[in-house]
Image 1 (cartoon, rainbow, N blue to C red):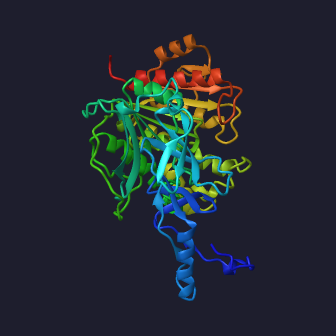
Image 2 (image 1 turned 120 degrees about the horizontal axis):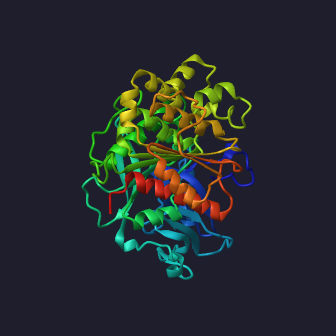
Image 3 (image 1 turned 90 degrees about the vertical axis):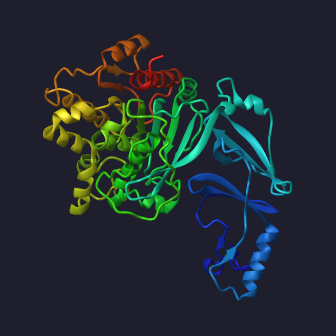
Length: 471
């Protein structure tokens, strides 16, 4: 924007748009000779650049027209880097006169970020330092894996981006064990960096999939608005569609019903996995995706993992306004004081629907139930501990004819991340449900590295037990 010389008043500003109308901007770096814009284009992270000379020419052309029109438009070019890099951040760009921009590139296949520099004049990207060392000892051989973006067809016809990573050598026969994750809330984007459990799963032949559902920010603010408030069910439709897309089943099942809309690009079902090999995982508000799947489409999953889950949405929003995020979250979930919003929230609320199905058709629910790992923290103020405990109690009740709050629960229980031997014993006793509660931790779980690694190991064992084919 141009501040009109010495007058910085907003009335003097001129809007500036780069060549991609669908770009969602997250950051910007301004240098003496060029400008770099960071953002997402149709869900994919991109870095766009243009010169100050191009900007000046565009401004002069705009001024020659008397300043009329929508503003200045410049053509920007994309900074080239491998599609294997799924996360991009600005580097330390402290020198205003530099001819290059430094970037931090992350990948699901590299345990460490790579430091790179893009040279504006040469239009080339080079790695800085020891690129081989950046791979790290736990890195996967990128030549053996595929990392790509596909699109699932949601219930209303909209294409939902799904990032997929797996070995080049898998058989597309619906038998590859697959972990599907999503978030879809608050306009937040899933940042796809390597994690220890990802490398372990890929090494064991798993596929990793990440559904960029509505409610998140991967496709901009409109994408968030389409999955929040009175449109929240679209997040759940998208997640279920992603699960179907990874297999070979029909797409378009709606949680609460929907209508046909204009579509994003969509691909045919991938036939990578199937109901006996697919696991879903959600953290915090992202656990709602798995919570709705547990009652709306349990037949699609062999296992579901709930990390610090926020599931008891209607009751929490209604009865606990003192919690730190309750008032803020009315913009996200709706105001339960409004009758229409309250009815809508109850229609998709996971705990209310599991309880309803348990009363209506317990046999059908019991037959379709996937295995479940529920993890919570007793000192979690964002997603209080009762979310995890209520889900465990309802699942336990659905699996038997016992009361909801049995005095001696039958589910295997790990407290505070116990010892590996205790975890093994718990898995041996776990038919449908494993509850893992941290007694001293908060929303972000253990702080000690040893406890964090133990948590990851528990999840890996659970996923292998539930989904992996016999070896």
